[in-house]
Length: 385
Ligand code: SF4
Ligand code: SF4
Image: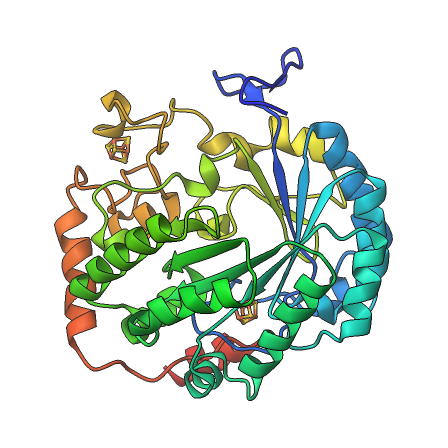
């Protein structure tokens, strides 16, 4: 599928723009996870497991997705390896002809299971690494002994001939070890590293003051990443997710709302963005009750911010409006009270200075304790407040 691929269905699209085929599907197989990272992008009120889509239901979703034009499926969570039927789910994805990427913390994997997944046709593994310092990794993840296990898993992935991406979420507690984390990714044979500055939604927003680095630390991390990217050309590819509070321009939400990606939650809710459920007036559809193509093309949620017709100034007349698509709606909502406002990460937003100052003030203060991500934990925190 290319940039120019569009779905033409007469009378289907309420938005004025032509609707493209989605490229990727994020399949959140479960919200359960043995780790408790305080920056997790899963929702605060996570769904319980009995209502999760079955392997058969995922199979149907994958067939629909492939017909719609999806090329890649990211098997994610929570921790997807907690699904005892992960093998069946993978078989369905392979049968649908999708490129399969397993996004995992690796801590529950065995070599035998990974070998089995590779034999079934798994194409790629993305391994999250919390820190190169084992003790710091234990603290941030609320899980003991993850670091040595992850190193082992990385070795198995490469031994089995699978491509490996190391995913690092950067925050004030590990930012000084960024050079060591880059070295780690090279050492374990990763072909790609994702250096993702924490995105402050869901659990990360709740833990913002505990996680946010200073502007100086952020600037230094950009220099380190740029230098490493040059030095390691041909060895490892860098994907960088910038820090919004210290940015000049925002990044496009999900590569552009309703343009590239579909996120499906463990119980089948179909989301244009994983943090969008709190947007007032948004209507979320479910694959259990509606065909995926209908949701992608006609769904109220996907059309809410598709294209540029929803924009207000300064986005409306900005030359970057079809580059960053006005940035993040959830961030605009939480800072300005209006999801149609310009993302405060943009210097042209009237709220940008306050947005940056908020980060600088929090980063200058001692970090508060983490609120660890657990099913049910948010309710306990709310009750204690
Ligand atoms: S960010 Fe941490 S807690 Fe959240 S799903 Fe990933 S490994 Fe689990
Ligand atoms: S004003 Fe809007 S479109 Fe222009 S750069 Fe800022 S967020 Fe992007």
